Image 1 (cartoon, each protein chain N blue to C red):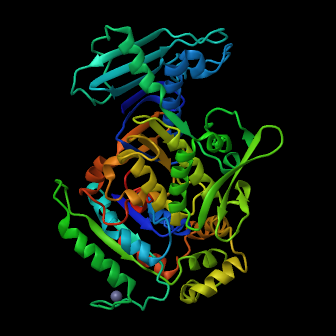
Image 2: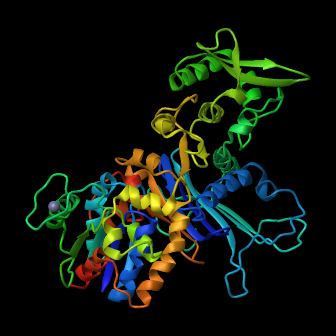
Length: 186
Length: 358
Ligand SMILES: [Zn+2]
């Protein structure tokens, strides 16, 4: 299975590397170069096209939830990031020309928690998986980076190793991360 | 106009072809080969001006300019350009058999041929068909048109520097702006100044003044500074670069190719539009020249590249994978192939920066 993961930043990129391990898929990353939901929404249509014409089986669009209200099934809510991204994907899909694919492109919109960086806290053993995922994104940033204004990416890459170690030891991943992995498996 | 460049065995250009338009913007990651392409154009122009010694510096050349092919052998080093001059299409091919320690780089083979009228652009043709010009004068004129191409790698710290009033010409890095301005006829200086005023509101005049010996300095008089001139080193990087670009354009001849390495570097993004408009106008009607010039520039900036959202035909993506050598792709073709559309939904610079074209 070939999976295209479009994610917001280098932290997500490495965290999502676990999809490769856990799902055993061939994973290609594309990073939204400037962060923020507006950029993700702006590029979503082109990302869907790239996945379709690139012959990928599955597209995962992954973004931080920030202040998005929690998505619910049959939700239509203007501030909900899942709703907005799914609307983008739904608009783009019917415009895709048939190129003789074996099966149509599948898509997963993953907006698992306020800040994906929360998983790094769990990697550092800074709290229980559910607890860290429910922390406010500003709180997560403060706990990880303190007052540091720069060097976030380099620091995060260091903690990703710890996160990976815990997962490799077979520990139960944070719930939202697990949901992403399950969605991809399905 | 230069229509096509093919280079073999030079830096990352193992066997690389570039098709050019009146305005060509090269984008690509660091190390992909954008600079090598501009360099190759500059070297072909140097060759046309003064032969192989000017192309690669004075002898003795104790380096082997040819790349290895990875199997202990050497790739041929050659430069080939297709260009039109008058109504005729020509192809110039320079092959260099440079050997280690040789006292003179030498040229094994230089051929200039006429091409059939509509034969432009094929991808990597094997050799050069066509008829050699019969008349030596035609040969020289055609070669002279290639010699007018120049490539700039403008550096604000060089642009600001005073220089000898007799320094001839603007250097690749922009050194020599002061003497260029000092030696411009008054009406041409006014014309350049008017241009600059449009790019930098508040400008009253461009000023040139003498110092010790025969050094000349330049600066800007503006409404805030009253009677005083702001010396070039106190101007913003963007202001200095704009003056450098204007001097580069004003010092060109109509029809010449003018290259700008990293056209976005040193500019605040709010000025990208002005830069693109200036260079576009140079290719459409000319800026300081009695006719359009050809422009080739490189850029790293998605924001600048996005200014070409509706001008995809002018964009070339330079890529290099492993030891494969640089490849140049038409962005319009890539958008069609990778995304199945003629235009991206998001700005083209963002789509490129996200690697959706590769
Ligand atoms: Zn929703």
